[in-house]
Amino acid sequence: MGAALSSEQNWPDTWTWSRVTLTVPHAEGRGRDSLAVSAARALRSQMLTRGTSVRLFVSPVPRDQCDMNRVRCRGTRFRRSVFAHVRGQPTPSLVIDVHSFSPVSGFTPEWAGFDVVVLDDNQPFSTYSKHYVAFMRANGVSIALKRGGSNDIQDEMHERNVDAFLTGAFLLEFNEGLLGTPDRLRPIAALTARWVIAIPD
Ligand SMILES: [Zn+2]
Image 1 (cartoon, protein in one colour):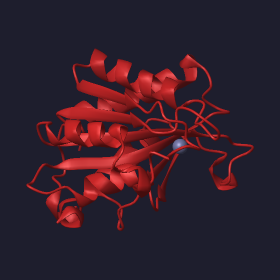
Image 2 (cartoon, protein in one colour):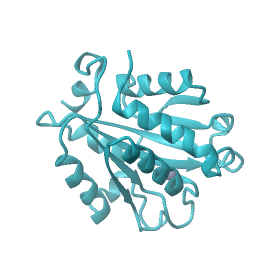
Image 3 (tube, rainbow, N blue to C red):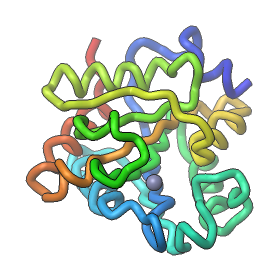
Image 4 (cartoon, rainbow, N blue to C red):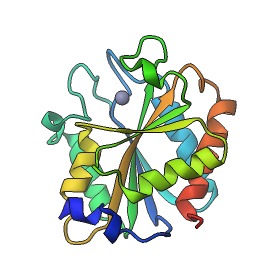
C-alpha cells in the first residue's frame, strides 16, 4: 500500500503540501551531521515566512548510541514522537529528513560537487522528489537525486502510509563545505519553501 501511494500513478501532477515535518536524526555524537541543524532551521524559517505549518524534530541522542535513521531505533521516543506527529497531520503532508555531509571526509566522493543531494528510497523515484530536484535545478541549485537504501525515517513513512494519509518523504544531504554560512543556506531553503507551497507545472 505504501509503495503504491508513492508511485507515479497515485500522486497528482501539482499540489501544495499542507504541512511539513522536518527531522534531524544525526544532530549529536560521533559522526554527527555538523550542518544539519542549521539547514533544518533555515528550512523551517523560510517555510514559516511563507505560511506553511512546520514542525522540527531534532534528536538529542548521540548517533553512536542509537542511529535514529535506522530501523533498530524505530521504537525510541524520538521516532515515536515523529510518527505520532506525522500521523496527526492533514494530508498531504511532507516529511523532509535533514542531513549534511563532508565533501572531504565523506564516504561518497561523488557527492562532493553538489550543494544538495536528495536520497529517495522509493524505486522508482517518487514523483515529488523528481519534481523537487527539477525545480531546484531550474533555479540554479547544484543538486543530485540518488537512490537511498535504509533511511528508516522515510521508510517508515512509506511503509506505514496506510489509511490514505498521503505522506511524502525524502532525505536532503547538505554539503558542509559549500553551505557553511547562512548566506549560502538561505536561498536553498527559500527555494525549497517556495516549492512546498506551490508546485508549478
Ligand atoms: Zn546524517
